[in-house]
Image (cartoon, rainbow, N blue to C red; front, side, top):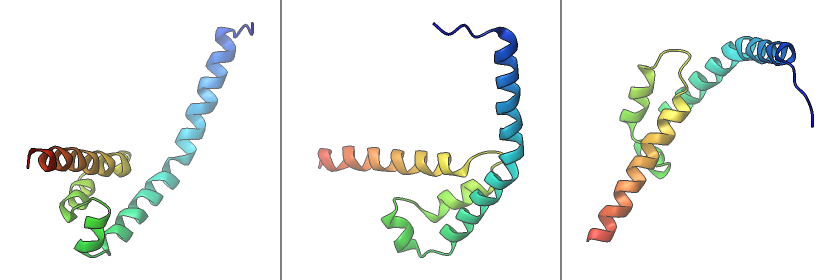
Length: 90
């Protein structure tokens, strides 16, 4: 079995944190670019993706380091879940 010492773990954790910090601006830029592209879509195109324009507006209120993709995916999943249960009740 591989014995991982605490010092090795600290170095690895530091390197991982350093890479996350260095990649942060690129991740923020990419997320904002994706939001901009989604905002250019019509309401019909957004509906095809399971999103509403209000979902995009909600994402603009996020802090720069929050992931809008996670919020959009959650909104889409909740809408799909309620839609599926609504269809079964009818």
